[in-house]
Each structure stands twice: as C-alpha cells, then as structure tokens.
Length: 548
Image 1 (tube, rainbow, N blue to C red):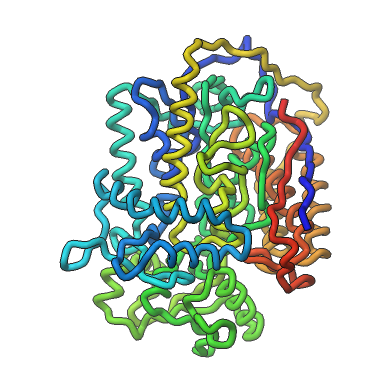
Image 2 (cartoon, rainbow, N blue to C red; image 1 turned 120 degrees about the vertical axis):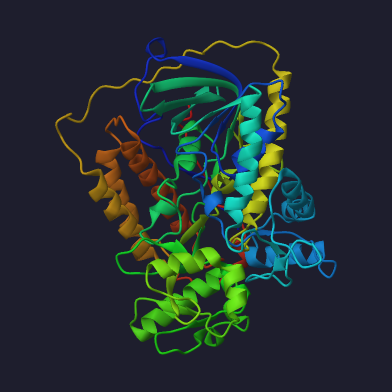
C-alpha cells in the first residue's frame, strides 16, 4: 500500500505579527540556522566570497552535537568493509532506509572522519597511532571513532568551532548567538530568509538568497529525554509552517540508557558502555536481555528500550541497571571519564556501583524531507542533520550514524546553497511580506506556560512514547488540539511562548502520523498492531497549505 500525503493546517502561518516598514532588515547570501555539526559543516563549505550568517538559539557551544558521547561511525578497520556498514544500517532501519543514500553516506564516512582529524579533532588512538575504534549495538564490527573517551561531540565541535571563528575573523561570516528564529520568510513559494529575535535588538528580518536549516531535534516533547532544553522542535515547526514537506514524524528514537535519579537531571549513558561489555540487569541483579534478544545488550536501540521497559514492569521497579563492575578499572577510566564524573556527583562509583538507567527520548528520526543534496521541497531552503528525514536512518537510527549524517549532509547542503547563491547574481530587495491579524485573546488572560509544557511532555510520554496504541494516540490528539486552540491563538513576545507553540505543533504532527502507521516498525511500536506489515514499508508524508 502507499500512504496518501496527510494535510494539517496550523492556526497561524507566522507566530508573530510584523510590518516590514517597522522591523530592521539585514541581507546576506546564505543564512544558516543552527550551530551544531550540520550547520557548522555547512558554514565551512560556503564560498568565502559570499556573505554568510549563522544564527544559533543559544551559545555556539550548546547543541546536541556537543553532548554526543559515543562517537562517529565509519569503516576504518581493514577487516571491516562498506557492505557491512550498509547492511547494519539498513537492517536497523527496518525497511524505510533509502539504500542509495545509505551507501553514499557510508562510503563518504572515512573521508569525513579523516577530514575532522585534519581540522584538529583529537580522536582517541591506539598504541600504533591509528584512530581507536569501538563496537556499539547493531554494528557487526568495531567502527566507531571516539574522542576524550566519552566526549566525542565536544571535541569534534571544539575543532569545528575554531574553524568558524577563523572565518569570522576574516569577515567571511557572522555568528549571531542567543538569537531565536521565529519563522522562515516565504514569498511566491520561495524561502527568502527568516525573522529572528534577540533580547537586545528585538525582531530582525534576515533576507537570504539561500537558507540552510540545521536546528536539531525535538527531545523536549517528552518528560524523559537526553536532549538539552533547547531541543524544542523549532526547526521542524518553522519548516512546516513555511510549506516544506515533513516525513516520518512518528519516528522518535528512545535511547535505552539514561541516568535515572529521582528528582535529578537526566544524563545520557552512552551506548559505548554496553559496547565495551557492560551488562544490563534488573533490580534483582538478573541479566535480562537474554530473555528478549540473542544480541543481548548489543541489540538495536528500539529492542533494548522496549526490553528495559518490559523488565521494569515485571519487577515493578522504576529503572534497570548498567553493571560495569566486572570491567577493568583502567578501561573504565580511559573510556568513560565524563560518565564517571557525572555519576560520582550522585554518589555512584561506576567501578563498584551499578548505574540506574531507563529509556528516554533521544533522536528525532522524522523531519523535513530532503534529497541527497540536502534540498527540501521548498525552493530556497536546504536542511541537514536531525531536523531532516534524509533516508539514512529508516525506522531506527543505528548508533553513531547521527554525527556522520550531520557531516555528510551539512557539507552537501552547504555546497548546494553556496552554488545556488553564487548563481543568483542579482541584488535583491525585501518582498512585500506582511503578518497581521485581529486580537482574539484578551491580553490580561494570563497563561502558565510551564504548567502547559509539563502537561504536554507527560502526555506524550504516556500516550505517544515507547509503546503506543490507538486509544492513547487518540486521547493525545484530542488533548493536544484542545491546548493548541487557546495557546496558538496568542501572540507571545519571547522564546518561552514560541517554544511551547512549536512543541504543540510538532506533537500534533507526531501523533497524527503515529495513528496513521497501523503497524510496528523500528522505533514505532504499536501494542495493538505488534507485527510489521510489509505493505506499509512507505514514508508517511505531511504538509500544510499555509505556506504563504
């Protein structure tokens, strides 16, 4: 069967009212929204003769890329080969991978990893000087390059940010930190830039010949998540409101092992911990993965997440445990210094104590539809990284393929946008874009944003989380629509309100798509449709008609 394209119309095309005559204007050749690995790699690919602006929601050093622990996958071992990496990725993707995209990314991986080393990334190495490799769940070989033990993303982004700062010094580009992107600007069916906001200057129109979206994920949709507070699905929402096609929005990946301390902040416990030999045990010390999958702790993430959840229910206990106590202390210290420090803050010595863990929302597989060059369905808009659906991950992302995707598609989107902007020789003026509507909500009608968001993430965790069914999804859909009716009709003046509006929109896209996929596939598990239906090996696409 083939899924028909779904339609959903938000209450507003733009989140704020504006008149171009009353808002400052700025013009650039290329606008890049996002400062993670995809956005920065795109920035490094732009022709230095072009003017580039990189807009980041927070500081340049805060992104999911920086938080990435495990590493970046690539065939660097002579005993490994491309076919193995391709096969592992497609196997994890459960029938939704684009085989050509997988092959393209896998074959480019060693080049991109070595390029990172040339840019200054200090990967961990063996005694012979080669890049050290480890094996993670779903991988048939050791092919995950890592840095600083378990702080790979931090080291990669350090090196890449240094390169961007050098370009900034040479006046090739500007980085606008602490700047929130409210919406993409469109005119005549073409993306023309974005309207942004920061507390010092208020709203600004940034007109661009080409725009690259690299805003990351939407982990803050859920109560339990590994994502930082900035991951509120803004890129997904602004692209959808602008008229870009979205795909596979039901596919949210849950990481099996998130540090669980009641009342404490959540921290990712890298898949590399299991890759190095840690065991998953329940509250009774029983190594339960043998009951669920022959690959045990190295099974794909969706299987491990569901297994942990099932064992928690069996034992009536709020978490499971990672046991490293049988591993050599030297190995633990070398590979997991950051995790060890985080756990120690909670009184857990990972050399002798088990780590309490439970699953949490980790990676948004669904997103803006892009082709192999990073081009979206909206002319003038390119996209890369977690905000996209590229065809690489299918229905379940293989561990350590995310940084790789950001590099490969960041480069391609940057290259494509750079060429397109260079070809647009004409200077351009601001088109007549106006956003206006009558007041429909009394200004004195206060709204507790924190309360609504807490209710939202709790609802999504219970009704649209690791296990789903029609009754729960329908309840979520109705409740989200109710909240949306009185939240989205308001006009907010700061990011806290805009983030809530974006979360509500993305949550609705997720639940609508999840109800449509009446099967279980990869990270999408329906308790009322537990089998995979071969006839449903298709993408669920969704668009809006309010692009102008």
